[in-house]
Image (cartoon, rainbow, N blue to C red):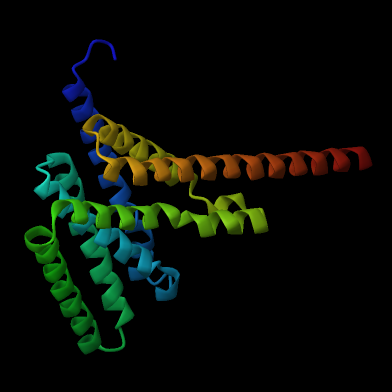
Length: 227
């Protein structure tokens, strides 16, 4: 590849993927801000998705530390901290009627974080940690499946956040190539799946977008003929 050293190419993909992953972890700021400003209800925030994303970060950060891979633990360590802010805000608003319930939920969350991080870093083997992280990563990437089904059923292409999807495509691509150069299946499998779902979402978005535009143009043409 243009005479570049294999290790250098791996580092380029790794750090590019790190930057894109951090941007991806920041994106929930929009619905969280809407929740704080009371423009969204608590049941409109994907709390389970936030928790899965957080668990994904914790396990990958542990795996990155065990594997001595600075890109993996830096991206997911920072991603975990960002996700912790979103989840804490979510839990505060979930227990808004009672400060005691909100504090209890946050304390339980902190205890779970400490226990999981300790177990996967000090007790469980590196490979098992990596495979568990891979499972959560697959769950995250498979989550848009429900959205794809809804778009196909309702033909509302705007249900797919196209810019986030394109960003996810490049993020998955970078981590996939990083995994290929690192020869690590635990990175290749989930990011290959993420790439597939991103491409599928873009295709479905374009199909229904083009259909909608054709229908609008046809409707305008009919109105002109009537006039």
